[in-house]
Length: 327
Image 1 (cartoon, rainbow, N blue to C red):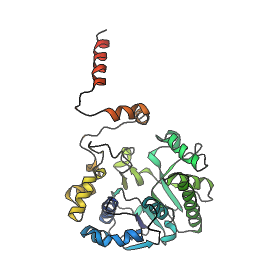
Image 2 (image 1 turned 90 degrees about the horizontal axis):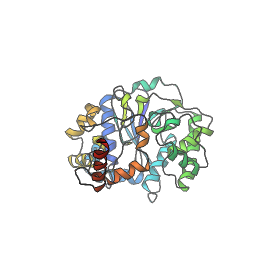
Image 3 (image 1 turned 120 degrees about the vertical axis):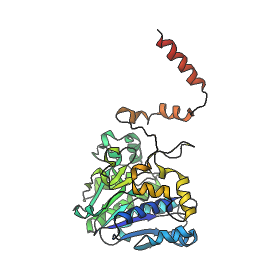
Image 4 (image 1 turned 180 degrees about the horizontal axis):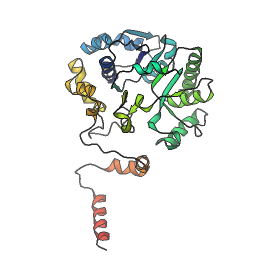
């Protein structure tokens, strides 16, 4: 393939971002052995790789080249990561496909060479913005940027982006980075609201990539069988001890890689067949149920529910069900 692949990493031993990226790049190498894969990172992360032990050296070896950006190490890690992302056009030469670290590459990516658009990405959560499950929260975030996104037909996910090397894309990224910095100062940490604002004012038009190029496992089951890239960290994480929807959302799986110095058999199985990343028992929802899970009522119920634990509320509801059932 002619298009380069670009990954961004800002990481320390206190997180598992390196391990996530290790999985994604390993899967990219499996399906695209001749691809030029570039790591874009900051000075602090680059210096730390040698101290990561075997997995740090094995990680570096996966890349064709490493580009180190001179960012102030005193800046918060998340800000450094987003500055690299919104500025990646200026650090990497040529056409490239940016891929988030929390992904698994499921097949060869050389079809991306045929996309002629200067800029392309997939819809966020595989839905038009009018039906976006997080629509109101997104509108509220964009208002902090003094931008009204409510009339947008599409809201794009920035986890996979095709970026051609043109004057137009360079101007676009300059504006995106400026919008992000202003948004960060206003308390908007995600980069997608500033991306939406930039798309609304920029002369460049973004093309819609087919959903298979950025298949979000919680919302994109329909596209999983033909997916190029599986995006898993968009699922719900951090729910106590409950089993995660996708294996790679489990910190323990990533820490096991760190201990092993590379891929474990469990993770390799997911690379070989992304379907095996799903929990053994997984239920799929659609329609109004998607919006139910975003309500305060559901969040309250979920917070107070514990499997196999006696609950006075459940006891009262059972009595009510029994009484009304017999009427």
